[in-house]
Image (cartoon, rainbow, N blue to C red):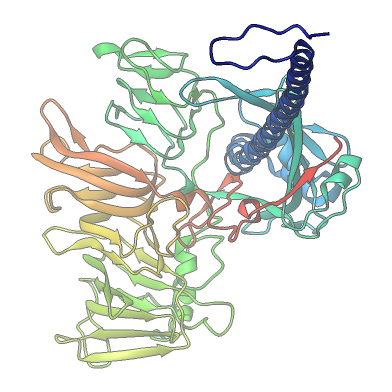
Length: 629
């Protein structure tokens, strides 16, 4: 029997039909196997892709959680450094601060009560620790991509604070300076979410207990932690403090980088800038109102008068002028600074150059060294008007030149009207020179003066080269106080001025006229004058004599702060007269790193730098991831 043959194209060979079917089955089987392999590879690839996306989201959620934790840490730092200080200055009382400090279980109330910005979230307290929510699980904070605004993820964080276990240091009632120091640990728990991925991290202060114990409610105290310091505020901490009413306006070109307070009212013409707290005791502000001045019980007068910066606090408590709790005349002779001015017997008892008696103290310049080995050292006491007081730096040391026209004629053993004083605190010596060529000299050994120069009179000036001017050596803290007027006739600057917040050179200068003005003698001073100082004129003003008659003399670049009875004039406009103001606040004055023996206000402040150095709150925190939350 012959098998059927298939037809093939010309030149082909015949294939049996049975073999043809077997080949078809083989091809189909191969295709099936390949399909299974491809499907398996596809499923595996999809699984790996899903796993990769899950890993990516997990990494993103961890990054979001960490970012949220550092955002919460920044919130804590701002509240402690800025908001707590502002609120303490605005409303803290001696009774409240003392009660919180002396009861260690209540220490955290200094944070929960005062570390709250206006309109900000409040702290909660469970009796052992305080907590602050930055977002909540039900209402987290959304993180978006910069530029596109696309959502990345969301986080919520909780800040936890408790006493660190370190005993607080609380000043007893009546102690000067008054300081209250309390110590805390913190932990921050932050949860980040990106789609279906969630991660939680925790930051805690150096030495603080592990985060699970914080969440369980029983963390151990570190015994150290970061401090919160509350102390009596010095008058020098204000960029501007004015006790009485004034006719001087604040214009568009007026900028105050530091705190401002008026016991009466602000006078605003246009848009002055306030970069810190600004307050007044009266309820109504006086506005220029386009040339028709008006009092309004509001913080602005649009469209004419709109201050820039923070809101104006109206109805704030008045700050009284300094009392005799800090008397520079007493401090200069080495007596405790509280009380009435020293008499002749006390003045003579402070200087080895004067015989101890009750006789009248002759005019001249005296080194108050006599009490250095007993109750403490004094400063420099000048009896009579000084027509020249110049600070200089020579050989790296602070040098002071003084001229007292009413002093006796110089002899080889007796200084005359002109004297040169060299301060060397490293060697604990003070050396004086006098004579036509400074050929006569005297050295006071074992003496480190207390930084107070007191003029029982005024610092006068009638020509160039007289008055007050010079340089304050970079390691010198100095207060120049006078019974009467202090006249500045040239640049008065720091050898090393602070570069900005966080830069804390030691030199600081205070100018304190107890019974008159601190006056810039406009007819004697150069164009574009520089003055670095904290100025205190509780019954006078800091001003430019001739402000309304001088030609345009450029700008006074001032670094420091001013406290005045009346806001003094620097210059006029239309036409431009005198000096313009370039007022820069010395941030070091925000703490009690103030000029020596500057008086303290009845109020309080909560400084951080440069008093707290190093600041553990700004140390690198401990980090851990919380698993299973």
